[in-house]
Length: 117
View (cartoon, rainbow, N blue to C red):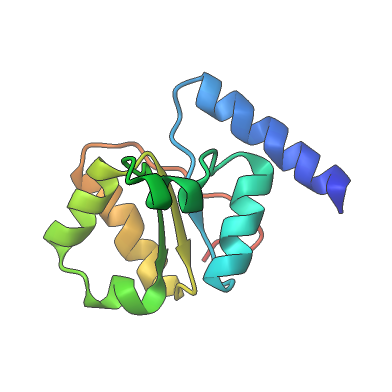
């Protein structure tokens, strides 16, 4: 519902204003996840347009299969190189791997949502 999305959007906006990096980690399909993330303000750029123009893309949408093939160093680099990140089709174990990567980078991590495990 749009009311729920508006609530999430407001929360994301407040977090970003406070200097908090908001990422999305979900079991949803990457296309669905990216659409929801764009709707609530986690993703703000037009990725397709930037791909056409060759402009640097600050957004990454990574599915669980790709994440599984990434080394710790690859994941660490992804977190540094991208401001807006959505992880889709992730397992509970992969959620932990993502949290640990942010912690390796010296970040304080909070996890929230309906499927926190």
